[in-house]
Image (cartoon, rainbow, N blue to C red; front, side, top):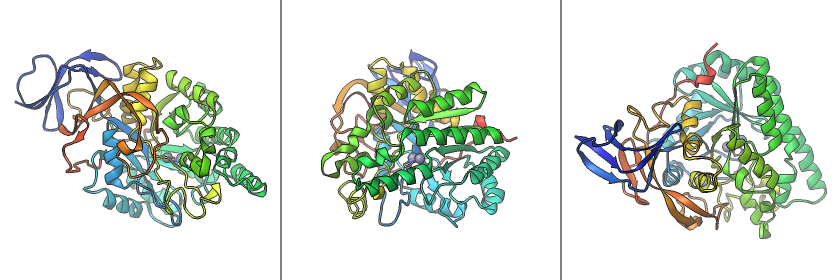
Length: 468
Ligand code: DUC
Ligand code: ZN
Ligand code: ZN
């Protein structure tokens, strides 16, 4: 006797699309086929797609974000929103503050997450202080413990690493088998341009975009790839916003480098013109790198279609708009430099890709599954336990209605922000039911299990980043 049988749906993996039933027992997929037998509960998936639960490998939750600024989502609201968006695993970042140890930072995040998650979670580290102790002892031990990826920044005064520091991190990553993600923007160039904008009295949100131009992203992308080449380490270039940075990835690949590229919905759907809104409304779209122009959108779609981008993540980084601790904090309502960087999007990531990608014929359903789950699991060491529908995999499953059409309204979403950058966008195709570890948590759009049974998952090393 199975626990659950999902009957009559169309299953899609990153390789195949086929009609079959799925049988689940003890949280695991145990059979796939027809006439599988009896189950205690049957879910009718006729006319629906049965897909691996989404994995969003780039999410920020409860991350300290500067004096007086508070991120909108905690683990409860962030994972609830993720679940409604068809996700069963998210990977938030654990930020190391300068002078702080990595383990101490992780303990804080684990304490915040414990018992509060509607989806499974796993942490990437953000290394802001690569001291000898961190690189020599903490990081190698943490990689052994299943924290197998980390991010470094080339921008932000308090986070940026020098080239020498990045080389040190990359060298440790090569020796330990960690996978390094890089935020590529040239901080000195940005600082120069911010100064120029301020001198000219250009304080409005739009200046955020013009002070962080494509050249600053392209240059940093090239430099990061060159540093990784010198150390012979694979690299993930996160949140790519335009063709020039994308072409740096393609050139590095042509030289034989192992490089993974990531883009995000904001670079497919928004432009810098969105930062022009009346009454400082443009602050709602301030994120880094900034959204660019129509040509860059087309380039990012091209990168999705041609497989330059293996990863499509939300970069969910939510701040409330009408809030003195959010976008309209006292300094942020006067000067773009103080508007916190980031936008919400964990719930809308997959519906946007389904509607704009699959329904508009840009990608097929298997490519959608690869971008929504499989490639994230493979890149970050969760595959084949997660990211596919296969015997033995965790029964993390999203059931999609490909015909359901909805217009995005923040009032209908489940994060703790107070707006969506995609308000008013009409979407066809929504996840209607979600199972986490074989338990139906979301059923026909309703949260039916509030027990928050999502678990922290340690990860294997990325197959890209084997120890050497
Ligand atoms: N980088 C991110 O990855 N997310 C939000 C802000 C940023 O700079
Ligand atoms: Zn970043
Ligand atoms: Zn991010």
